[in-house]
Length: 386
Ligand SMILES: *Cc1c(COP(=O)(O)O)cnc(C)c1O
Image (spheres, rainbow, N blue to C red):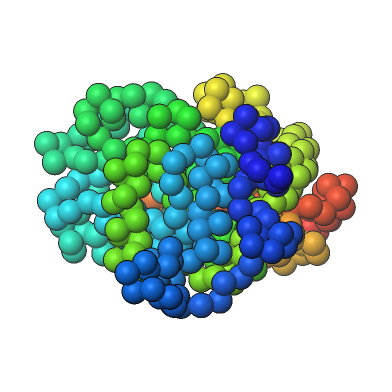
C-alpha cells in the first residue's frame, strides 16, 4: 500500500511518492533519522547508510520525492538554493565557459562573477528570450547553458525546448532554475533539460520557515557526478529541514493552484488601473512571452511585478500595506511584497537596472493564501494614500 506510481496524476504523486510511510513501523510520516553515523553490525556487510553526509534515510526520502515530481532519475537535497547552484556549477572545470540568462537570480550572478571567475570558469550573460544571442555567445570552450524562466523580477520567458535542442546539437549541458514554476507548473526534464535546480526555500517549502535547495538529473552518469560533488563538498541539507520540506511539499498543488488564481486576479486588477505604469505577469494577454510560456508550462505562477511610476510611490506603498510581508523571498503561504531596487537588485548600477525594467517604481508581489479581496483592498488603500 501507499506505493507511488508514475502514471498517477501530479496531485496523487505529491501524496504517494514512495517513502511517505515508514517502511519499518508504518508510521504516517518518514522518520527523522537524527544521526550522523551508522553502526556496522558486521564489518564485512556494512549498513546501507554509513555516514549522513554521504546518505541519510530522511534526506533520501526528500531526494526521492523531488525526483518523482520532476520526472528525473536522481535527486539531491542541499543546505540552500545557492548550495545547490554552486554544487551544480562545480561540474565545470577551469577553462570552461557557460552561457547564462542575463536576469539570473542575484546570488547566481554573484557566484559566477566573484567566485567561479577566480576558478577560471567563465560566463557570458545573454538575453535568453533571443535564441540568436544565445547562439552567438558560444565559444570553443563553452560547456553549458543555464536558464531561468520566468526570470526575476520582470518575468521574461525563455524557450526551454529551442535552447535545449540547440545546446544538445553543440554537445552542451542544459540547466534550468525552476524555482518560480515548481514541477507543478513546469517540468524541464520532460523538455530535454539535463539538470533542474530549485531554491526549495520558496514555493516547494512554501512557509518561509526552511532554507533548502534541490537538484534533479535524468542521465545516470550525470547523477553520479552530482552525487560525488554533493558528498565531496558536503553541501547537504540537514535532517530536520529535510523532514520539514517534505511536510511543506505535500500541499504544493493546493497552494500553487490557489495562489495562482489570486495572482491572475491581482495582475488583471493592476493592469486595469490607470495609475500603474507596467504589469509583468506571463498570464496577461499583452505579455510578450505568454504563448511560449503556455507551451512549456501549465500555469503562470504566483509572482506579479508592477511599476507604480516612481521610487517615492513605491516606498509609500511599502509603508502603507497592512497584509503582505515586506521582505525578500517569495512563494510562501503569506503574501510577500519586495522592492527589487533596494533589496534583491540594490547592487546593480541604476542604469543597468533601468535597462532591464527594474525601475525605482517596480514592486514584486508574491501572492499568498490570504483572501484575494482583502489583498486587493489593502493594495488599493496603499496605492491611494498620498
Ligand atoms: C531564492 C532563489 C535562489 C537562491 O536560493 P536560496 O535558497 O536563497 O539559497 C535561486 N534562484 C531563484 C530563482 C531564487 O528565487
